[in-house]
Image 1: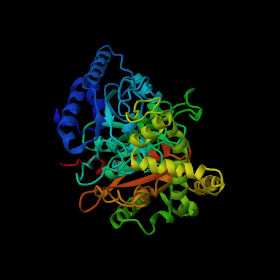
Image 2: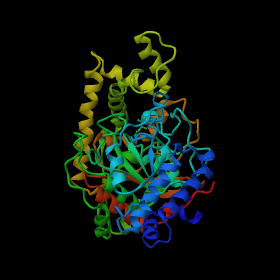
Image 3: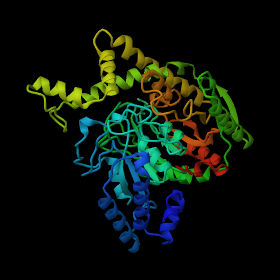
Image 4: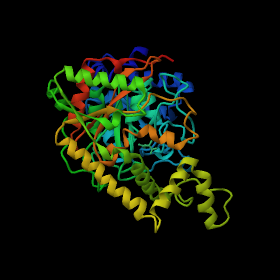
Length: 488
Ligand code: GLN
């Protein structure tokens, strides 16, 4: 069954439909692969083999009766350990939630179940989704399947590494400032973050509520789009979920395959700090579009120079508030050393949270404190609006914006852990998309000489996921970077 694990989602759908293999056989192949490579890769925090095989069996029974729930019925999907799945651990990469078991399903998990997908495993992540490398996970550092000495990106580290390594064909992550797009780029797969509000956040552990959005990983744009469609839609349980109809992304993608779009290339994304091989690969992707007959327009996003500070002020302010609930009283970890109520709060938090989480709570509390609120948080919100306005101005002239996803390919483990600022700069091209609430996708667009994947980012207008998917698909149709397989 080894030949199954690197099939595209399209091939898997076809194989299940033609009865070339069953969901049980498919699931067993991924389980076997996972067990083989996990000692080196460390993408999974936990898995429940019996539960997963039962889901596969149920899918096979539905199929035998002609009652499949969706095209993806029977296909395994991995979940970042941030989504509530009833009865399963939900650690969010943190000691403070180490023993927590979800009492209910997140809305998007309900949707996966209603579509018949097989839920395979809980994937490693930076603690509370704060990070770009998995090195902030309280439990383990995930390796990049293209070079085990390097990080896979983050914070949806396990979600990207597991798909790239053939442990699961599809996965879900969250993206607050780049945590889907950056690991997708560094692992050589497709990752899409839809418009803010497209997917309900109910049952997703909150990091920064005005920025958090879930999204999908796959080895093809079609696979990522198909899975995305299942997750999208308004939800009474999340007041920020958008009451917008959800298009059939795949049908739209096919319809627009030959359309010649107008692409904006922002000068600010190609300056100092962009590594040479990444620049070359992204520029040749832009050249490809030009040769296809697309219009390529130089554009400007001048407020972008403030994106990193505005993001870290906003995200940390929201995080400091969201993380106040982990108090040692509710939710699992309580310090055994505490004797008074104050000590319960104090010790449980200081023992339960990792260093980066504490740094962010401190920063976030500071920028919200009286006397500093206007100077930092208030100011950041104003600049956030300018960033949004910059994008909207550019979108009056172009259909989508094309940029590198990450300024450099995967870095070595340990290289940036001592320097939080260097780590924060990994997100320089992605955070503004969250600040403006826009959809963004990363697709593989090349490799460095040392065989590290490079990602291309496409940014779309609000609720125009179909446009960036179509543009991404046009590239994918004529290149095969996304089909290459890491050897390790
Ligand atoms: N790396 C960014 C951060 O540390 C983005 C994380 C994310 O998107 N969840 O906040």
